[in-house]
Every structure is written in structure tokens, then in C-alpha cells.
Amino acid sequence: MLRTPIKEALQIAQRDLRTCYVSEGIIAGPHHFTDVWGRDGYFAALGAMTLGGQEDFAVVNRMIDQFFSFQLPSGMLPYRLMRSKMTLGKYRGKPTYLETPQPTYRLRGIGQNILDGTTLTVLFSALMNRKEHLQKIISALEFLKTKEKNGLLWDGPMAEWNDCVWKFGNLLYSNVIYWYMYDRLEHFSLGFNKKLSLEFGQKKQHIAEALRKRLWNGKYFADWNDIKRHDYLYPYGNCLAVAWGLTNEEESHSILDSVGGATAQFGIQTNTPKYPWWRVDFLHRAIGMGDYQNQSVIWWQPVISFLSALQKMGRKKEAEKLAQKISAKIVVDQQIHECYEPNGKNEPVKRLAYQSESPFAWASGMIVHALSQL
Image (cartoon, rainbow, N blue to C red; front, side, top):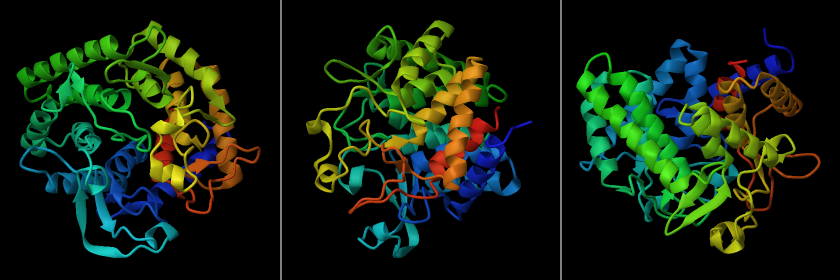
């Protein structure tokens, strides 16, 4: 039985997650992140699937269907379904809604392709056993193969969750998802096409080998590799690798020991060390948000994935202690916010040009998923 404050924190996270359910799927948040972002919606879906109610499963299925409805002839899927116009009012919590959602495939609509809408839609199709989408899945996989280099996905600048930092090439975040996508596809297809399942399993192994070759530095997976390996510690990607079963026991404990040294009050640093100023998007620096995803501001994603990884590896005492710490913060705030100031009060970010979204679906879903495993 869950103990208070964990039980209360779980109830708050459930409420906040369900607040973000809409007809098209799970929005990132109801204030200014009112679009259905692939990464936000699908990571939030981990919580919806954990809750397991009729509407929880239905909203995940609606989201999958919506993303596939906008699949391009190339096989690519959008990374965001825009539900409202890009206006100043939108970021003040007063969006102007569109009659129908509009798909976005490129960074800010004009930049490089963003791939995690494709990988995550395929991943969750496998998790939800959506066999009727098999041909669309195969088309998406063929597209993704055209985006490989060195046996891994090759991303352009600012093409992952950390979309304000100039890094490109073989990114840890993108390729851990890529590996897990094939891992779940292997399991998904086993019951109806053993040959296809074998192919997926072989592809999964090739991705794992390439990840170790390109990114493993002896202690943890490096953040990315372009013309060289960049050994920043990126806890979110590393802890997902552990929680999802990519790493062996020795690698897993090495990662957890490394990440455990990157604590930031109730959270985990997004990256260690800090990225140099010139890698941070000029627009973010111009509005005073140069620390948005660069060590200083505190986010839920790294620490919740760390909690899930601790649970995966049977480090129960550490997981219990961390869950209590996380839950205490949620109970005090009575809501799941996007990100927090690194001050003594850990208040939600509220600056001249930007305020933290709340409730925040991504974090709420991951918190539901992690705390429910205790």
C-alpha cells in the first residue's frame, strides 16, 4: 500500500494528467502548451496506460490515430499537431484555436525534420497492439532508415526534447527511443508474424551495438556524437536506457551511480557540465531563458526517469527515499508544474517573457507511471 505523501502525490498527478486529455490526444498543458506534441503526449501516455481506464486508453488511441492521419507519402509523421495559432496571446494563456489541427514536421515549421513524432507514434502503436496500422508502421520504419548514419538516427540541431541547445548527429535521446521502438515492435509482432519479429529483434541488436560504439564512454552514454563524442552526462536519456532494459547490469549500476551525483534539490540536473553559452539558442537567451534546458532550471523528466531506473534495478531503498522527496514537493505545490527555479523555494519558473506550464502532462504521466510501481 502506498504511503502518504506518495499516495496524495499520485492522486494529484492523476488529476493533472487527465486535465490534459482532449479529442486529439494529450496536450502538453492547458495554459499555453495547448498543442498535441508527440514527445509530451506520448510520454504522458505512459501514465494514461498505467491508469488503464476506458477513457485513458481511448485518449492514447485517438492520439495514435491523429498522428497517423497526417503521415506523409515518405512515411514521416508529424512531431506536433497544432491546435492553435502561434500568437503572443497563446503564450499568455489565451490561444486562438484552429478549426482543425495542423501538423508540424520541421523545427518551428521551417527547420530540420524532427523525428521523435515518428518513433514515438510507432512505439505506442506497438505498446497499444494497433495491428491495423501495420502498413503505416512499416512505411514509417522505411522513412526512419533514410535518416540513419553510423547505424543510428542522425538528427539536425535542436531536434530533440532539449530543443534549445545546438547539438546534432547521433543523439542519445533519439536513439534510446529508436532502440525501444524496435524492442516493442519485436514483442508486438511475435504473435502474428514471427519472421517480422525476428527482423525487428535483429535491428534492435544493431542499434544497441551502434549506441555502445558511438556513445558509451565507460561510465554512461554520452549526450551525442557528431564528428566526435561529447561526454556530457544526460540523465534523461541514460535513465530511460536503464528503465527500458537496454543496458546490462554493470552498465545500469554505473549509469545510476553517475546520475546520482547530479542531484539538484528535489530533481536531477538536465545535463552535466553546463553547455557553453554559444550552444544555447539565441532566442532563448534573448528572452532571459538561456538556462531553460541547461542545468540550472529544474525539470521532472530526469528525476522521474531516474526513479524508474532505480526501481528497474531493484534499488528499493534509494527509490523509496527519492519517491518521498518527489512526492513532498508535489504535495506542497498541489500541482505538477513544467519547471522550477533553482532557488531555495523552488518556485515554478515565472519570468518576464515566460512562465512554467501547469499542469504539465509529460511530467504528470511519468509521475503516475513511476509512483504506481512502488
